[in-house]
Amino acid sequence: MGLRRLLIILFLFSALAIVSQPACLLAQDYRIKYARHWITTWDGYKLDVDVYSPCSGVNFPLVIFSPSWGVDKIQYMIPAAKMAQKGYVAVSYSARGWFKSTGIINVGEENDMRDISIIIDFVLANYPVDKNNIGMSGISMGRGTVSEHTDI
Image (tube, rainbow, N blue to C red; front, side, top):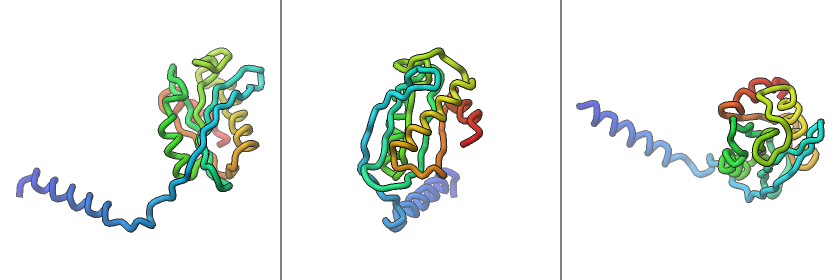
């Protein structure tokens, strides 16, 4: 049997295994809502923040998408909306100094860390979030910011 034929057979069996899973294993989809916020930093600047959340329910995990260098919060619009559909409160923001957020651009410095803490405090006070289930995700500079924020 040729390698190509073997790979095709393995692919078909894999696809069949995925399709044959019971529907009850799929996560519930929630209706979601979107809100844009201007959150004031500790030093008086404004952060442009989007929050995607399920329309009903309580104690959802929180995920914060930290932006890449030179990329606006829209980078995570689709992933954040998909996370909200699956039962997360999802946040995407433009880092200080970028796009509509005011302030001076930092690169993973203390101000960036403080900004994330202020965003978390805002979301905990205004959304149905489980404060024990908070995570972050990021690409490029956003990944560096995630690595530096050790108290999450």
